Image (tube, rainbow, N blue to C red; front, top):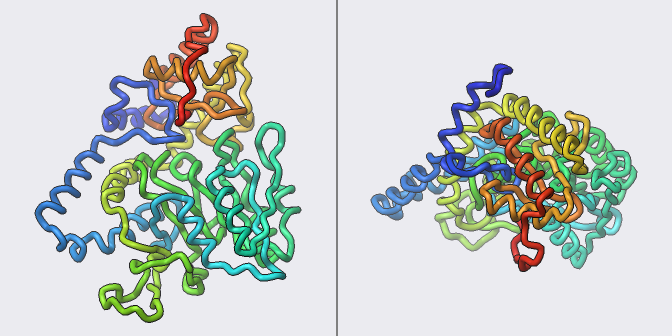
Amino acid sequence: MDTDGLDDIGSWRGEFPILAHTVYMISNSLGAMPAAAADSLADYARTWATRGVRAWEERWWEMSREIGDTIGAVIGAPAGSVSMHANVTTATAVALSCLQPRPDRNRIVCLESDFPSIIYLLREMQSLGWELVIVPAEPDFSVRADRVVDAIDDRTALVHLSHVLFKTSFIMEAAPIVAAAHARGALVLLDGYQSAGIIPVDVAGLGVDFFTGGCLKWLCGGPGAAFLATRPDLLPTLRPRFTGWLAHRAPFAFDTGPLEPRDDAMRMMGGTPPIAAYYASLPGLQIITNVGVDRIRAKSTRMTARVLELADRHGFPSIAPRKPERLAGTVAVNPPDALQVSRALKARDFLVDYRPGVGIRISPHFYNTMDEIDRTMATLAEIVERKAYDREAPARSVVT
């Protein structure tokens, strides 16, 4: 039982059906589904069944703006500044399509510890004239802010920066990097996939030009609802080349002349949106809003500290930052045979994941309890001690 004034957060546990039979410690990968998401998807189905094509004019066409503003309230982005996309890689491509490499400004700075999907995208962009500068990681997979600053020069057009590094949950110090980039005339894209919903985020206060993220993880909204927040004063000046009819001021004129972009963030969007994903995402967003990210962070800090305490007690190394202000919602624990141990945990309904180099990522959210953390670590230790796993288990194409 929690005893620090956060007890009432536990009342939300009943909203997440999987918690009744599973110890769910994998919200850094996929947040638990709220029960209300099923009702919301049923509402989508009823709307489609009963309203048919009329649903577009009654809600669906502007639903991207509706859900974008809901997300904006969580991350501190002004209304009308958040556009919706299928995934963060696509959102990043849209932002990048607003820029044109020039001989005197054609560099993109990113981190070796950024999520690989983004680095794959940026590498392929080199064929269009971009030059990629990758800031190396430290042995513990963190990245020093001063090294990022040193990598920025007068040829830098864009700095891509993970707010929280996905392997280690290390919180990057964004402010000096943003200041250095702007001083050199460069834009900054902050990837908040591992920060939105688990640590307080103030997009406007950070002063970043773009902020990406998604509802898949800590926002408990499922796949297909990623987002791109664009600095409001920058927004009217941007013309994404990766675009489509949703961005058009008058899409139903079906005019094939030049695009006349909308004034709000929907000018950053493309083709027909995934409406079902929006319905699925809204209940999680509403719960996160009601609980409050400040309170979520307070409980998360206690829980990650407990994971580290127990990891130390059992002698399991962890690459997680030891300063609470630098650690977000995940603790990576690296026992012997970590991949096999993670699979054994999942077989017992303790859901975690594994990443090469850091081990088992344990990611409690506000709906978890200290008792679940204690049981997870005790079970992990028992599996390691008894070697209660199959060393010969076949490799899988999906490692979670």
